[in-house]
Length: 397
Ligand code: PA5
Image 1 (cartoon, protein in one colour):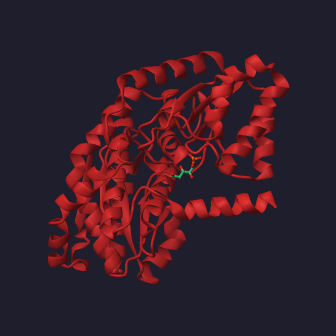
Image 2 (tube, helix red, strand yellow):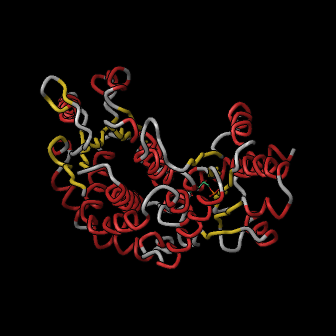
Image 3 (tube, rainbow, N blue to C red):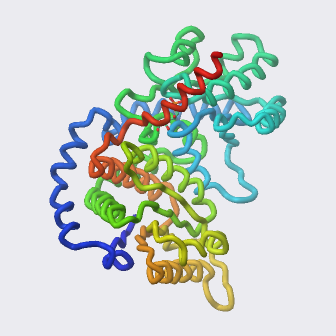
């Protein structure tokens, strides 16, 4: 369950009339969303696909020691963030999932190859386009490791591809080699692809897919809040608050802020508009960026994440440490607000699979609404394509 407070530390920054005016546009904005062809992520995933993903996950767990997920941007951040929020910090006994494909660092890739070369690992390569440079390079390097160990028939058993149903080099390879494969549907873009095999297969290795699916579609009930969040952000932007700082009080939520940055950054940042998404982990960053937020340039507003209940009870001088963490959260929001920084709050009753999945749907919906409020197309990312082409051209010379 999620709760929202977009008023207490925000209201004085927002003009009531302007708020009402944008709220009245809800039907128009909803129609824009419904008419857009890239909204497959709002539709119910097929039960047969969930079963197929579970079967493949069972096969992987029975046959391999670990899986390397290779993908970047929307093709990895959802499952990566979800996994980090739920796994233990220490002595984790989850099936080992390694996320790679996000760097061209020789140091990282050399060490990764060294780490997996003697393990019985499989690869889940994920790319909707099937052409992304980082994914392609990492995949080739790891496939070479498999080729050095196994014959061609065995190599094929170690590769699972998640990609477009017919386009791209990766799909061509799947068709030639006959790998197990999954589809990222045409009507779902990378950062909106959480409820597809791109994220559900890595997650099915360690988490209950039924809980994830239930939680995700529960997010539909938060439609009004998602719109309110989009409207509030839009009005703050118009007041010169052009940066949104996502503040988390659980270290394990830091990767989730990376997912948020990608979702909002790629959805809104077009045609000279958009809110720049940033993040801080508290209380750590209160001892660094906290100074800027409190007294520096007033370009930002913040969205705080509070986890209401935590089953890990730690007594600190007769007080529950988790309560202390939450008291700190409230106090910081108040202090920043008094320093001229509007603070919105999202409360998660618990940090569990259902709530996280609900939150993912909520933010996808809100980001889409926000894109339409800004008057841009939320589901493309032409700016990212520019860099991809530039690199391809440079490497071809
Ligand atoms: O959200 C998006 O569409 C992007 O971030 C992509 O997910 C990212 O660029 C990776 O693309 P691909 O899945 O085609 O490799």
